[in-house]
Image 1 (cartoon, rainbow, N blue to C red):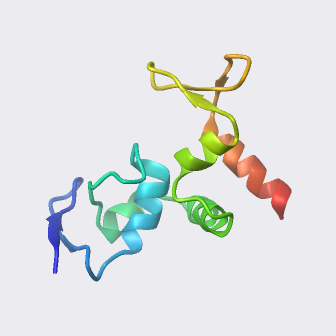
Image 2 (cartoon, rainbow, N blue to C red; image 1 turned 90 degrees about the vertical axis):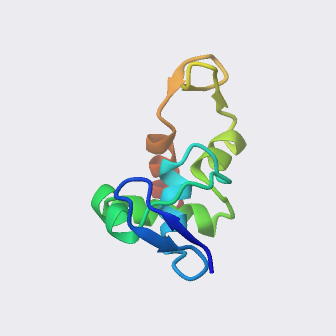
Length: 106
């Protein structure tokens, strides 16, 4: 049993049992898919919209472990300034682009 504290509200989360937080938080919120920070269900529910949950389902169905992995696979690059850019160097909203890809795939 592995209990850790929710990063946002300090509630204890048993990550060996309560793993649903992982998909939304790690796929959309955390900086890296292997980030070990935890957010509990109530905090995920407060911060995430149903559309984001649908996006998570799309990413998982497409075989991605994170939004970042999808972005890298889509030939976007993360620069030192924290901004994603396309091949021409223009800034890209990877969440918006992932939503667009999800819409096209349906």
